[in-house]
Length: 302
Image (cartoon, rainbow, N blue to C red; front, side, top):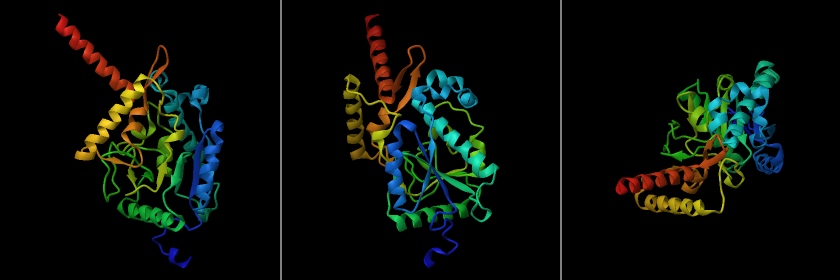
């Protein structure tokens, strides 16, 4: 298509100069198939990369040892470790097969790669997606040719408006462009907690994000959340509704992306090392409130 032949379109219309990967666990291959169908509508073919299922203790393999900190082994939920390790191993695979060995043809040898998780789907139709992706990349390359990560999906608090900049709250590793330099840097990283918050931040990486998300994530298939029908579920629902009510009238805590407060309260954040019990954000808040109440009662009794 002649209109896409200008220098403004950095990525070719057939995506021949953009190698894409989808991180997918072997037990959930249907997620990859579902995503692949939607990506194909864009003309985008993504190579499946088999992720690390830490729920099956796959992260204890000797070859992974140097990437997982002792802190993570003791205090980080298994699925969080598995997610972070999967991203690192995907970068290792890219480095070995597409950077170190220069496997691709020279004229189409990519300087960056697209990494996705298997629960993200495009927000736009073929041509509109292609134009938005190219505009994002073209603008950022003019702004900073040494960029390392560009988030194509981002959520969290304090959404930036009409800017490509990021901050500590610019989370999500669901879909992003990553440069060769950033891939090499990732191979030197060590896992402590959530990769998007602790590792993929604007301090460690020269990181930007699209002004508006090009993908959305389907939270129904996430393994990094604790959703159960018990007493804490009522407190979770109460907190999320309270935050939504306050935010509706004050807009004091702005959110970016498709996630609601409920999703953030469900995220796993901590593992107790003695009984290997995992806690989400809501659990931590409940325990903190409970301890405050007990301390007040103790104070009044004495």
